[in-house]
Image: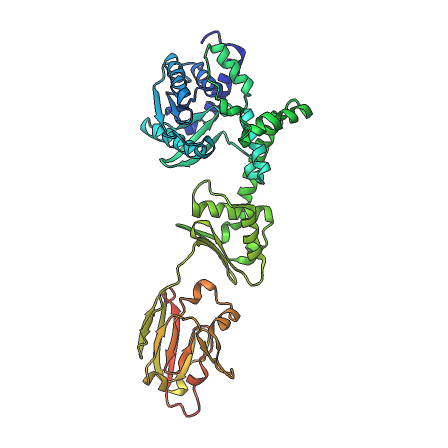
Length: 472
C-alpha cells in the first residue's frame, strides 16, 4: 500500500503513534485484531497493514460470528477472511449459538462470548492484547450514554485507549488506537483500500439505546456544534486525566491508615476517613470495592453515599452490598469485605488456675490472697474465688443474654452494655463471656457481675486476665 490515500495515511499514523506511545508495554508481541467485517474494524486492519514491515507487530485477525444474523454471518466471515489474506495475517474464527433468541435478549451474552473468544485467541498466540476499531463516534456515543445513566467523572471517561476487561475466559487487554478517527474516516479508508465492508441492519434500529443516541441525539447536537462528537471525545479524555489525578490523591490520603488483605479492605482511623473531601473519599471507596470484587467492579452513587453517611455518623453501622459483601463503620475503624457468618456458639471450661484459649482470646486465671489482688481494669477482673469452686465456663454470647454489672440494681441486656461500651460489632460475637451458676460473671471490657464481686468476707480472690492471642 505504497500510494495510500489521505484517510489511510491518517489511520496508519494514528496506529503508529499508538504503537510508539505504548512500545514498552507492547514489547513487540503479537496483536490480535478483532475484525467484524464492518468499516471500522476493516479500516483498523488496513491501518496496521499500511505500516512499514519493520514497524508492524505480528498480527492475528480474529472474527466472531454471534449467531444473531445467521444469513449474514457467512458473508461477513468471507469478507474478513479475504481481507486477512490480503494483509498476510492468520485468520481465526469463532461461533456463538443464539438461534431463535431475540437480539435484545442475546446481545449481552453474545458480547461476553465474543470477548471470551478474543481472550482465548490472544492467549493461544501469546498476544499482548486485542485491538478493536472503536472510533471517535463510538466514544461520543458512550459518553452520552453514561452521562444519561448517571455516571460520574470516571464513567464519563468512557473508553480508554488501553484497558483490561474480565471475560469468562480470563482477563484480556483491549487496545483502541482509532479513537481519534471518525466513522466517516474509517469508511474512507475502506474505499481507498478497495475493501467492501458489511453493514449491520440492526445498527439502524432505534430500539437500542446506543442507536437512539447515534441517529437522534448526536445529529441534533451537531446542529448546535458541527464538531460535537469531537468535543465529547475531548471531554472523555479530560475526564480520564482528571479522574486519574483524583484517584491518585485519594490513595495518597488513605495510604497511612488503610490495610488491604485478600478480599477485604480496612481503615484504622474512621475520623481521618471522615475528614477526606467527598470526591476523594468516593474514589477511595471505589478503589476498595474494585479490590474486593475484582477489576472493573463499580459502586452506584447511592451505595457510595450510604457508605459515606455511615462513616460520618456518630453511631456507625453496617451496609449490606452485592455479592455477600458488607461495609461496617465501627467506633474507630471501618471495614469492607465479605459478610462474616455468625460464629457457632461455643463453650469451654475455664481452667483455674491456668489459661483457656477461646477463639482469638486467652483468659488467664489465678487465685491469690485478697491483699495481692491487682487493680481491676478493662482486661483484668477480680472475683470472689468461691465462684470458681462452683465451676466456671467461657462461652460466646447468646440471644437475650443479660447480666447485672457491679453497681447496677438489676440485670440489663448484654447487647446494650456492649453498644454503650462502643465494642465493635465484629468483636461482640468473639468476646469470651465468663459464666457461672448465676449467669454471666464477667465480660472483658465491662465490670464483674454483682453476684461475683469481692466482699469483705472474701477469703481468696480469683484474678482473670483477658488478652488477644496476638498480645499474649
